[in-house]
Length: 293
Image (tube, rainbow, N blue to C red):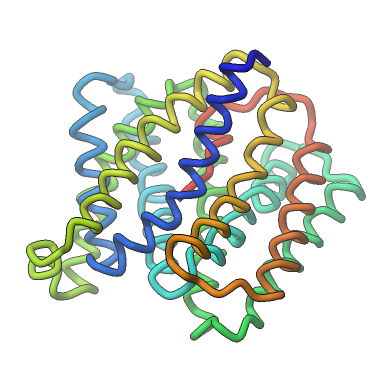
């Protein structure tokens, strides 16, 4: 990899790590489902008019928008509302073992003892987080874990859809997901209008970061890297994401650093590394490889 490409990869993982802090700030001010509806509306406004899919892809994109936009991002942001950004950054890594399981079920990928051991480590690390004294309740953590599972299921639909440019996927998934999330927000949340009107500048800065930083800049850079290099060259960079997420949560939000976070995070990252390094040498789509909040 060239120095410029390595810098681009670092920029991507820094954005992904900081995005958990932005999400925490955003959902603290605006109800999570409403926040995500606004985020996806803005992403769709910026991308959908300029990147259009084939008509034959519309139904599958609608399914993906439900699995990914509502299932993954909706559950993720609901969960982040009740856990530390650091905890969410670690638990979100379970998308890797869940995706490996889905690949074995639907695409006959072989797990083997090494990757199975990596899964055991990853799940053990997140299980350790469940016993953290600063965790107010187990439900938000289960939401984050369920969000990772929803992404893995969405990967099956993405794989079956075939090659679709990531910005097309991103824009139209957002376009289809925004009204679904808005409807769910109207049903299950309250005080959205007042929250939006009274939101401080930090909430709007967080929203801008999730839209421009995570959804557009990081996604575009990641797509360019994936199309230029083998996955075994760029995937190791993604292991820095949860490290940055934990560090930024502690430094920027004043979250406590407990031994459960340290040991649980280390086990999860080690498990994910073993799974990724032992994965079959096949080129996945850029959309399939991106799994961030």
